[in-house]
Length: 86
Image 1 (cartoon, helix red, strand yellow):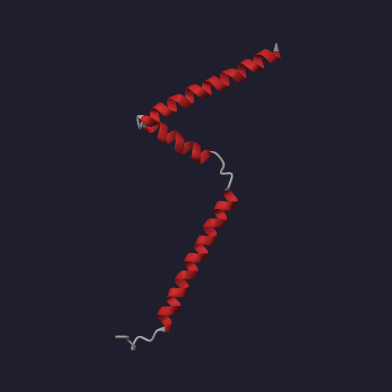
Image 2 (cartoon, one colour; image 1 turned 90 degrees about the vertical axis):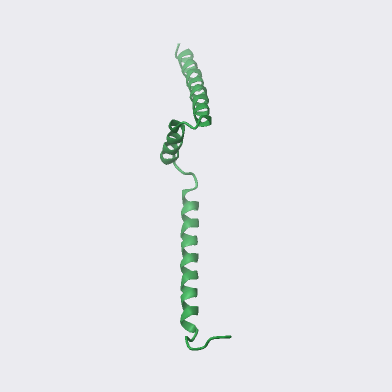
C-alpha cells in the first residue's frame, strides 16, 4: 500500500509541476506581472551554485577599477601643470 501511495504522490507532484510551469509560460507570454514577480522571488530564494566564483569576480573587478583610478591619479600628479605640449 505504501508503494502505491508513494508512486501516486510522485506522479501527482510531476503533474502539478507541469501544470504550474504551463501556466507560468502562458502568463509570461501575456507579460503578466505574476510571472515576473514569481521569477524574481525564485531567483532570490534559490541558492546560487557559483556564489564563490561570483564573489571572486566582483572583488577582482573592484581591485582592477581601484588600480586604474590610482594609476590615473598618479599620471595626473606626475605631469607638470606649467608644461603644455602644442
